Image 1 (cartoon, rainbow, N blue to C red):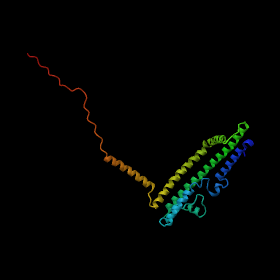
Image 2 (cartoon, rainbow, N blue to C red):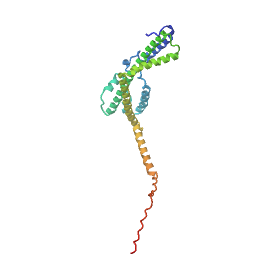
Image 3 (cartoon, helix red, strand yellow):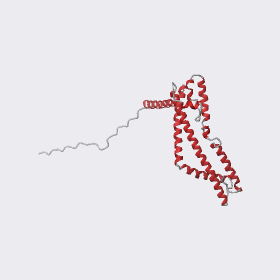
Image 4 (cartoon, rainbow, N blue to C red):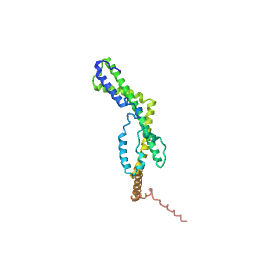
Length: 258
């Protein structure tokens, strides 16, 4: 453990130790992600999926859409046993298309969770290195006779150390590639999730987003045609008179008398 430079800075070291303990709990060091297949952000969308399962589960229990229950009763990405084996099976029978769509959504969600956990690990390392650098900087200030006096000065020094540490990571090729992969995975999951939602809304006989967009486009086109048909034609500009002097016929000369 890096010392902050003597008993005068014990309160700084206590704060740094508390931050490291909180970081250890957040990053899942006490429960590694590989043991459960879930990262530090794995429960971010848990309440939303639980609410969706309860809503569609009630609809399926009524018998109207019971045949499509596999669409929304999705196990987690790290599922094992019968549920995990079910996801590995190829689509067979009348629900093979729904099965394939659900597998695609599960794979997209698993990729987002994997990359999010990896990004969380990178941010955890940045925070840990920031705390180590903060301890060294505080010790340097104490040795130079200008110790950190209050929480405001500690916060400013912490921000300075964090910016310096993050700048090294943000300019690395590995971080740029990870960030790009995470954005692409999120966009892919959003598209797949939208397709699944379209199927669910059709099963419940509700208007889908694509249908609403089509109606909006048609309404705008009808409004444009109606305005063009009912608006009066623009007034014609008056004819302009030709400018210039009037043309006068030349006078005939009289012949001399002989």
